[in-house]
Length: 89
Image: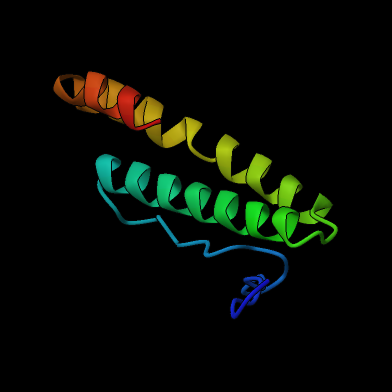
């Protein structure tokens, strides 16, 4: 890589996880999507650098599955935002 370093996991193999215990449903979804996009970015940087990206791949699978619950909450609690939320995912 020229002038760039691969992004390292923040702690315990987790890429930018946030606590979502007291947020609104749409905020939960935003955080979950941000975490997933970050995990995907890290995964691709490692893959493109030729590194072993198995752990990053597993993390991206976890962050993608973490999107499901907040998306469902948005669909149930904020039905007017359902179409927008679906497009974001």
